[in-house]
Image: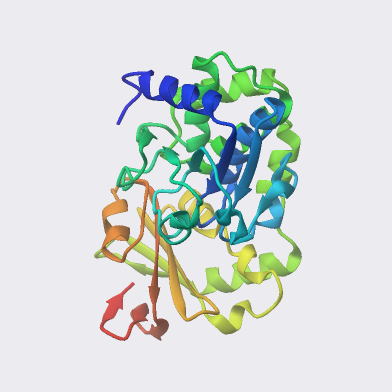
Length: 329
């Protein structure tokens, strides 16, 4: 869906104005875009004296702790034992992964669900769906929401929104970068967004140990010329140190930016719960369909998936071994 009409955003605005108790839900894999959008909305609603709670089924990355109101986002599923007039989700294309499917039925009374998202794989699970697939990020959609409904964006909200746009465009270097996103970034600068904090938190945030871990992945890069695909991996034993799983985030974006030989990048990693997560980035392909084959999703140029299994290393590169099949990476 494109920005063909502002009626959906106007409808969402009326619903929010009429609601007294509101629950905000971030994507199941919280990142700069989902948490940026959530905290921007949270800041506005607190200023409007709304009773608002914010939930993320997974802990927030430490790199996003600088965002105003991020500390108010809880992982306590007890929030679903309360009653809300309205539920808003942000950047959550997969309702199951974000806890919507499992936990929403626990609410004391059914609540209207408004979905803010830009993923092409979103199944439009909300009662109101502000899903615009030509946006660079969910934060770009939130900027338009505030702008079109006459909401003043303060410096805290601007910082949150610019974080999301910066994150999803890899600092305006990947295929998600749009003219509208660049224009919005300029407006957010003028509104007082803390650009230095964003750069330090999203980019200049790698310790020496983190860079060594990235070096291990770089040494494992395998290029498949026939598929124009570069693959690397992290095994569970590589990620035993506290915080190590978080440090691998961003590697696929980095490789997509610097690797000239390959159109598509795939970074695999084993998790503690027996899953293999794949992060895919591409310059020219639509990889959202590839991710969907493994139960994942995302954008055309940035997507991911998670499957039960483990990584097997072969002379032809890593592959995923599941209970049912062998998936070539």
